[in-house]
Image 1 (cartoon, one colour):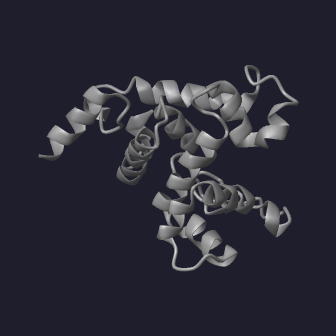
Image 2 (cartoon, rainbow, N blue to C red; image 1 turned 180 degrees about the horizontal axis):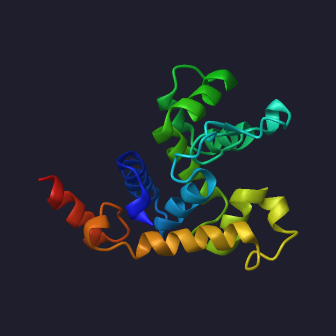
Length: 181
């Protein structure tokens, strides 16, 4: 999979791994898988704003396809995230979700934590997509979104050789760091 990725995708997926790991996500490649499923690693044609036929409050933004309501929940639970914004307005929050890939990834990581990614990854991945209420109405093990994220995550985990630009284990982190030196 990583042979098809651009340098920008590699950079953002590596960033996602680092953010997820620093946030305490036990399997950071799950965040990479979410980003691949949501926006093909921040590269889909219309990933900046999706759901344009939805009401404005039901649109999805950026790499992680985060709704404003989800981002506001993250900001409420993790108030230190406000340091990335100059104001605490919905407009600026929306703009940052759309235009700042790294901010969006940080919010996505925290949202995955809120969905319980460390306690029950399968259920949390489903909840990331459907919300916690929606996740109750489906079998997470059979949910197509969840299966796809897990498949992407496994691909990230098994990256080898020249494609080791994607981090998926501490040994690969060292490899990537050594290549940079």
